[in-house]
Length: 122
Image 1 (cartoon, rainbow, N blue to C red):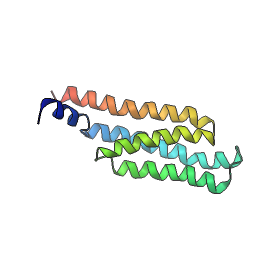
Image 2: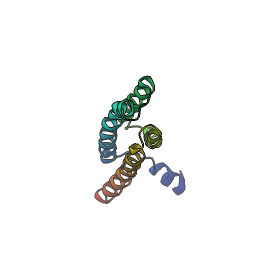
Image 3: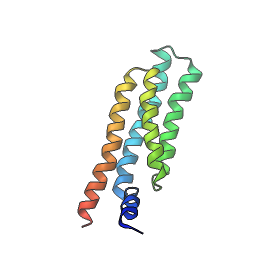
Image 4: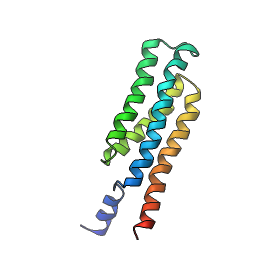
């Protein structure tokens, strides 16, 4: 492999620290988006079936992604979850803010873990 291909491949190397940090972010996010359901129904007046589908669907998706974090494609799916969490702000406007915070935590978890493990592996 050429140096550029190895470097590209290195961008998708999953490290144990990255898995732990990203799992923590997704775990907390699962709780928050799960709690989106009663807020959407009681406060925002969203139809219960739709609120349950969105809120609990996102929570289940977060948990499923946690289980797949050993594979590089799970980080792409996790990034899509962040976009969906932000989009859930159309149901509960506070989720725009919380979604952005979780997206920032997701990105930070990936880059901080890579940087810390890169330093300690030298």
